Image (cartoon, rainbow, N blue to C red; front, side):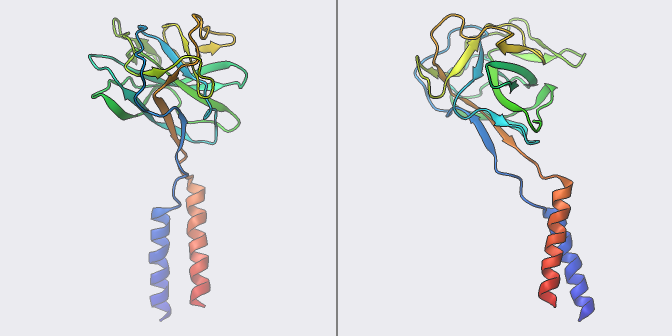
Length: 230
């Protein structure tokens, strides 16, 4: 009987270690990916989310999914990036995701595959995100370079103007790089007026359990089983 119980304990413990604890619930910042009535005709524009669901408070979570609603196709490119926010108007690029090209009109999600910088957030830091209407590739030195001729008008529509509840800001089409600053102390935001836009894009984060949390889960399960056997 004791041998059978031992085998059962080992088996259950193996299952607990293999499964671990579930990842924390996904967190999303940004705006709803829905149809909107304005086309973005500006070529190569940079958009930065400053709305109600940011900032994401760093906790070791990683930017995983970039979601959009596209209402134009025809060779348009979109490059997402992760921003560290200082909370008072300055945003620094800390990761640049792989450029994506909408395949169809409507909602679509893409992996946020970093080609420069780190997509994992740090405790004590706060984050937002943005995107640029252009294509980027790695430059062979750890950085990125915009592909010549790839800047286009925007595939992602917006609602506007004068919306203050979930606004985005825009900046010039200057090239992206890790360490680029937008807002205070950097590239000017909303330099031409026509502010209060809301774009159909968001960014998701997932925090993966640490090995320590998996081990703790296994030990907890074993202790519970021992109590039941007694």
